[in-house]
Length: 510
Ligand code: CAA
Image (cartoon, rainbow, N blue to C red; front, top):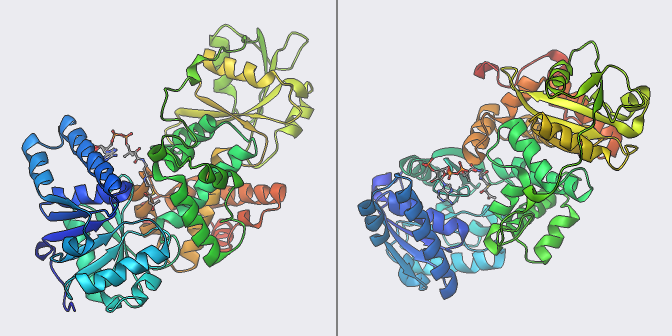
């Protein structure tokens, strides 16, 4: 049995068990760090696929100039693919398990490791949805078992969650923390709670996006575009679900639901249906998008742009720039609708329905609300074009044609509080505050985890500070009132900060 902190330099031989999406990425990463890797997969065809993925990823790094041919060949030479678990782990200093997320499989594997590994080997699991405590509890030396949770794609994402259970020996956590740094990652410590830090924030948000799609709030492309462009994330939620794997996300949600209950973690029926249909995302060729054939999204014809557009400006000046852009495109802009008006634009605010402004403007059938989302520098990033349900059938198409003519990046949303961006983002910010409130993670750790694990340009709590806690509370209250869903109730700490005007990331200057 291990004692004392093992230095990363003493971890020279690593066995990675399970060569799926995560296991192959982890094996690549470890081999590139100069360590020998036993890449173990009991299913021969999965072993071949995993090795092919690993080769392709190394080739890609070479073609991008990140790795020399020699370094790739040396990394490959350090990897021994095998389907023999006992032989593969026999000399390992560290075992990283990344097999399918089924407790009975993990427990039986760890029982096998008890017999086959050296007594001083460290056993780590990359599980994202199962209790590490339960896995460890069934082993002979639970003190040497911990979580080492990587993010997809493992070679690229900088975060590792080092998860300790109540049974994990502190020196094991310390060794894995040091090793993570040695692998070029930034470790964040977490305890064995469902979803750890990142998945507890990410997966409910992804599920929320599925719910919006399923309830016709917007198209899959517009849901993705709203968040990616609006928050500056590397990819939208449905694309990210396809990357992670819908089955993986469903498993995480089920664990969160088992542990915390409530409506926030209840899976969207569509997510289950796609899993039942084995449409798991990229890894199976199709999920929310189809990866087997090129997209035809750009092929559809746009509706004619109206000759006259009424822009109902208000004292806030929110629509001034938009009105100028429309005029500059030689479209007549009028302050009130006339008989010639083809489209009426009113200012849309995520905490209010557009419907009321639409009725006040007259012509509700031709009304579209415009919510302009600006960067901090005041540069226009995205417009949410919001359609009350009373809008006529062709209005969405006219609004899309207008946006294309004036080169405005736009998405179309139904008229529900929060629209797309704020509905998805603010519900996640609320979850992040709940985590701080529960004393599970600090604001700084949460922000670091989401930046390094998911490529956020800044963390959710810093974004919350920028949006203003009072504004976030107002939108969440409107979402709660409109849906009756208690998941959108602002958590007490958020409500308190909104009242007091406090910042979550005061130290970040935000
Ligand atoms: N394998 C290895 N490296 C990869 C890769 C892959 N499949 N895909 C991209 N990369 C690397 C590239 O080599 C590149 O590295 P350099 O900067 O050193 O050149 C870098 O990532 C950026 O790649 P690209 O420019 O080709 O592509 P991109 O800019 O579109 O980025 C992305 C791709 C890194 C996937 C980016 O879109 C991203 O960060 N997306 C968010 C991913 C995310 O949120 N992951 C966490 C999911 S949650 C999870 O995994 C945990 C769980 O338990 C469910």
